[in-house]
Amino acid sequence: MASIRFLHTNDLHGKLSQARMPALLAERAQADIYFDTGDCITAGNLAIPLAPDPVWGFLAEASCTASVPGNRESHVLERVVQTKIAGAQHPILCANWRNKDGSARFQESLVLEMNGLKVGVFGVMVPMVTDRMASRHASQFIWEQPIPTVRRIVDELRSQVDLLIVLTHIGYSQDQKLAESFPEINIIFGGHSHTVLDHPVKVEKTWIAQGGSHGRYLGAYEWSNGTLSGELKPWEIADA
Image (cartoon, rainbow, N blue to C red):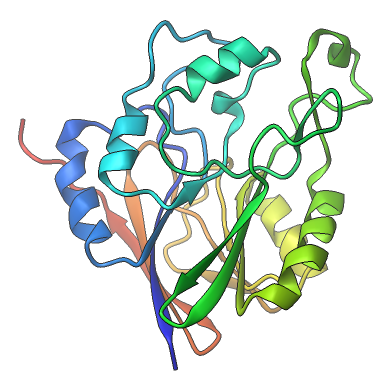
């Protein structure tokens, strides 16, 4: 039976430094796929960074496969979003972040071939501005609610892939609701709530993984025969 090894980080909040790279690269060398699930940059929601965030270069060095934006990577103005994600070299996936004309702001999904398996991956994040908020008038974007977005993407992707993964930045309680609502999803790699799950948790038929925040842990997992095994590992920092 084919297996896939995953590396996962979330909610780094600007803590991915050169001193953290040796541990990240050592784990990356053992993994087939590396996902980050948002809030990796330093700047906050409404902050306007003056220069590209160095995290994107570090993620490129670690060959990040894909990520989902978090609230830190969001803003109501396109020019600020462009500054926040400047330097990103991997696909950023988000199916519920839309331009005002209804088009997708980011790539919604991708399909990978790994170890003989077709892997479908898509992303959803916490809605920052919805069509019911007064702030929609000042925003160049509208975020859809995750549940209907997930329904649409699951319907599109499930029949095409062997393994279906969603990268989320919506918090653990919402991840649990997704798992209960969509047994078609095999794995949820989550973020936003800074929840420390020492090992993957199975909700209904779906596995959920999340690794705290601020670079305290690295998530190292293996998918085999319908099970996601593995654990969080303390993220050791090299001497300066």
